[in-house]
Image 1 (cartoon, rainbow, N blue to C red):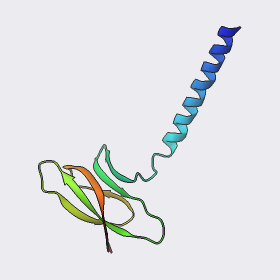
Image 2: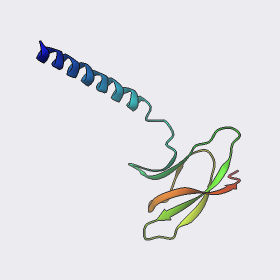
Image 3: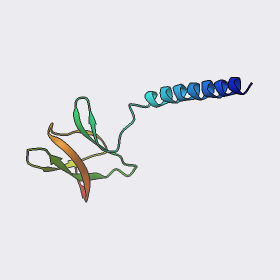
Length: 95
């Protein structure tokens, strides 16, 4: 009886994990805050709540000149050699 109960608990846990994985994959279109890599290159997600604020980020690049960029809320494609990006504490006007 103990073995059967253990198998049932394991099966329930595995089912719960599969369900959680499905829920997580359903939200993959959600904005990722900060620097992140995707299959098509580096991105920076600026998460914001009203009122809208545009911010300056510093983009660190591999074997290329680093740069600053003014971004509005949302996802922003970075240059291909970007290896990191972060908010530097400045506001700006991205238009």
